[in-house]
Length: 144
Image (cartoon, rainbow, N blue to C red; front, side, top):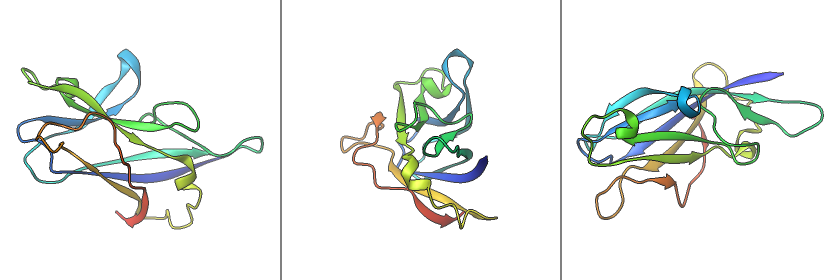
């Protein structure tokens, strides 16, 4: 059985002139979707994941945006040349955790509802945030 879960990532204070995009797929066969240029305004990434429930194990998140193994799921926001920006001065990925336990209660996942998180777009010295978001706040239920 699968439940669809609507997710939204709000990326705060992105670096101006740097391209950010959500990674769909894995390895050499991935694509960048929802690419947006940083302009110091909050960037929004919306996507859907599936929660797979089996009788034998705890629920697991799946879908084309989901990376990692059960228990350590995440999504990538690609940055600079990784997002397809030619001549970018930076490149890398931001790893946003998808802790399966956060999505156990999907009772309000009806039309217009889902889960949202906010992540930083730049470090204190003004460069893009790369690697795993630390500290990561949490996913909260929201009207999307």
